[in-house]
Length: 508
Ligand SMILES: *[C@@H]1O[C@H](CO)[C@@H](O)[C@H](O)[C@H]1NC(C)=O
Ligand SMILES: *[C@@H]1O[C@H](CO)[C@@H](O)[C@H](O)[C@H]1NC(C)=O
Ligand SMILES: *[C@@H]1O[C@H](CO)[C@@H](O)[C@H](O)[C@H]1NC(C)=O
Ligand SMILES: *[C@@H]1O[C@H](CO)[C@@H](O)[C@H](O)[C@H]1NC(C)=O
Image (cartoon, rainbow, N blue to C red; front, side, top):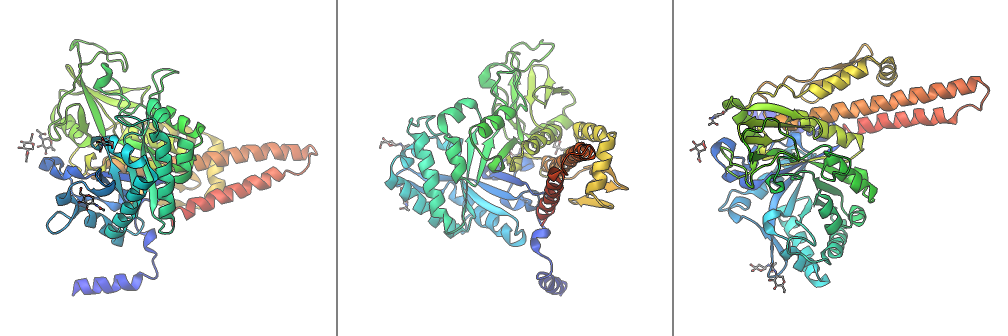
């Protein structure tokens, strides 16, 4: 009975309330969430099933992975038991069915991944006939399982058993897929390697940018035990001027090689990498210098040598008081140390700084690999440094009288900006930071992404207004000296109106 009334009232409300305003992140950037579906087989403590996915945190769910059948170049489920129904765990159906209650959500299927290797993809893309075979199978597959599109995770063209022609063949594949998707409006995206060598060897990025809807940059695995020294999995900036292994270098490379920033999606790792020091008596750890053994160690639950999910790391941090926590300033990453064991990872603080960088460069948004290793159940205590940098920036902004003036001219009256709580508000024309204290909320890293995104976008909007005010002042002064009335000031105020509109359109 209660259910009937509930259903009825939802049905009545439906035409009035556009569901898109009710679900998903409140900002206008993409948040692409990969699910490593094999997380289903992990130890109960860190097990993740498709039904655990929280669509409110993401704009896109990418189901990883489907596989390529090398005999006839067609796409196929990687794990029929996990992916399909009757009998099976119906992963595909569970994922795409979420779109019903969360209409903002796009669900795509990723094909490839590290373990698939490169050679099958090299073969498939090598002739127009085999590409067509593949593309026809993909269209049929997407139609059949009701996905919204395809994500290509070929790791990597021209590498790992691939051939030099892969670079051009990959472009041909992407273009032909785009043509085939056109009438159906399917999304076409790709995950690209972020190391300079891979970007140089594997991709013609300007052409890829033309045909792909979004480019998911895998901005992680920059360093690991293979270096022989301790280093950051995902350094924000390099250790020196000519260090090409950092998020910032990758972003600059892509933009300077002709990629549209709004198509670029910054990948963020929800895992860390660990090391065993060669010399346990090392007093100070220096990234890029301190020698490490060829292999790291296994985490408690996922048990993969050298790799630890954030969930494993944060639980270990709580349970094992021997860990000492540090912050590496250059790479802007936290690390833990206990004797010869070192874990370099990402937490709320480093993730928030990465999100800020994505916003500063005007990128399309961020991507996470992968949501299943966030603290999805909310068992960890909050890391206390989470908001350090956000608070510092806000406090700096608050003492600037121009900022107060900008906030006043932007935000008439008091305004809340919500995502299940208030991140900041404009109160009596002053900006106030009202971040959630997380308590035992689950998905702390996803939560950090949402908070950092909303705040960074607002900071950017305010700084643009500060600039406008400053420029207008200059023009006003010129006007008084008898220069021609400033068309520029009219222009810039309409630019702000536009910004305003974009900001609110993004919320719809
Ligand atoms: C999960 O991991 C814990 C701690 O290592 C262990 O005690 C437990 O037996 C594991 N459970 C399964 C199902 O593997
Ligand atoms: C491709 O070949 C496999 C056998 O290797 C077969 O099971 C599958 O049905 C074929 N797919 C298509 C689309 O022909
Ligand atoms: C790729 O094609 C070559 C030549 O036809 C073949 O020998 C090889 O086995 C193929 N590789 C894979 C992984 O299917
Ligand atoms: C560590 O902490 C978590 C969360 O409190 C708990 O579930 C787990 O059993 C603890 N023990 C180990 C060995 O990780």
